[in-house]
Image 1 (cartoon, rainbow, N blue to C red):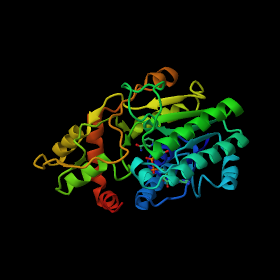
Image 2 (cartoon, protein in one colour; image 1 turned 90 degrees about the vertical axis):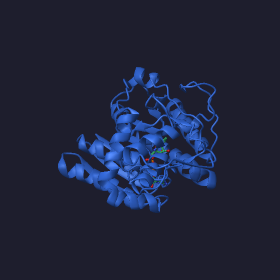
Image 3 (cartoon, rainbow, N blue to C red; image 1 turned 30 degrees about the horizontal axis):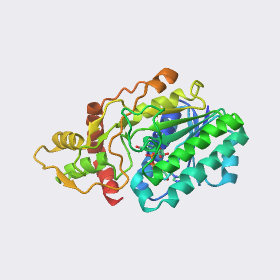
Length: 328
Ligand SMILES: NC(=O)c1ccc[n+]([C@@H]2O[C@H](COP(=O)([O-])OP(=O)(O)OC[C@H]3O[C@@H](n4cnc5c(N)ncnc54)[C@H](O)[C@@H]3O)[C@@H](O)[C@H]2O)c1
């Protein structure tokens, strides 16, 4: 199939592009290479997809450009079956500092991609949404009927994008699915997240720093589980017009995460605490029964396995990844 991955040089988009090329599909990755974190990581994402193309039947093409460029989108979408829309100004904290930017990329950009996808008549558009749309939990785990009252500009922008996707399905018949990812982690992940900060500091012999008291719980989702559910959506139409949680179903509190990573690397290090960060959710926990029912989604990687895999990967790639994480 012919696939467009927007944000294809980013963390999740890079993994999707690599996996789809390895599966034998022809992938165009569109990304404006926004330097809000180190571009060396995005370079590695592109190299991974290129290597998959060299090793197999699938083709890979990278296009540098913006999802707000309607003419470019029209050209790229002319020959595409399915769009995986991952491009975004990601991250809660950056949105608190500069709220107009997520609005421009995540709302205006998503609308532009939807219009181009509708005009081109693509088979499906899969939109990367976020657990940040929920805000404060009235109950946990969140199911998709939980109220949506985001507590950050980023969450607002992702919720608006989701609504545009639903409306394009209802008004224009464009098949869209929004996947609410719960904190995704894995190789080549974005820096400045608890996972990367803890591993980076421990490997350097420094204490991991916990923002707040560490009691915040997170539903961390390993990137291969995210890739798998996206892969199902290449052909499945059961979730068209829907929003679906994509999480791991288990949670871990941030202090326990820091302790486990510390114990895996250097048990002698002390845990250190700092002030909580603005806009961070207290607790996230996904009920994924809807994704299971409609798509057979069953997350496979447990948090313990994921920590081990990520720490192993980090050690093997420390020479190039750690300096880029620290410089971001
Ligand atoms: N990683 C997570 O934990 C997580 C959780 C929930 C939702 N999401 C969503 O998943 C998607 C992917 O997240 P990620 O972690 O891979 O982030 P990422 O920042 O690594 O990837 C996003 C990519 O979009 C690109 N981009 C930004 N503005 C663009 C524009 N105007 N035009 C084209 N490309 C542009 C960036 O350069 C980047 O490469 C995003 O939509 C994000 O909101 C991610």
